[in-house]
Image 1 (cartoon, rainbow, N blue to C red):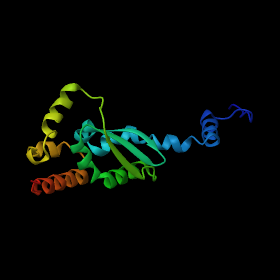
Image 2 (cartoon, rainbow, N blue to C red):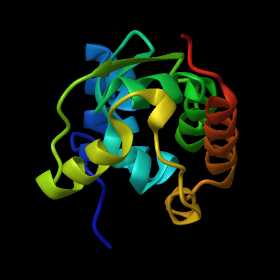
Image 3 (cartoon, rainbow, N blue to C red):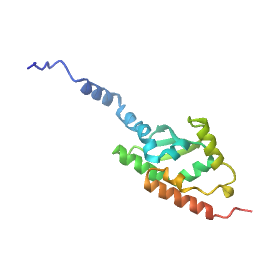
Image 4 (tube, helix red, strand yellow):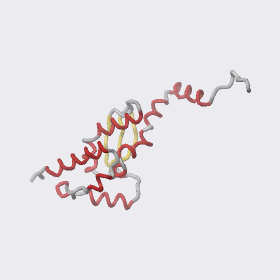
Length: 157
């Protein structure tokens, strides 16, 4: 059996101490959002909304269109709660949406763009297939309710 050398420390312990000393642990916790984002929101939303940066608990999310920004605005508290549940800590305190270009396959973006751009009063009905592509049941139901509510609104003359 090998003797322990008190001079040697485990690499993990040294790294942990360094992170605490440099106050980087919180930053690493914040960036834990990226690997879980697509799972939390589902692939349809993920194609149209991606985290850009996080600062002081505010997650900045780039979306493909104003329509997506408006719809997700109503769901931001639920999304933040689900992210925090998965991260097992209160990392995301607020979500700020901004319209911008999302890196994805051009064909997918063009298809989504055709479906979602234009006059909100003339948006096509959302298919059940589209809703089923949202993995999280709670987010899917909230999105469905939002779309139904949006469809009932009368356009301003």
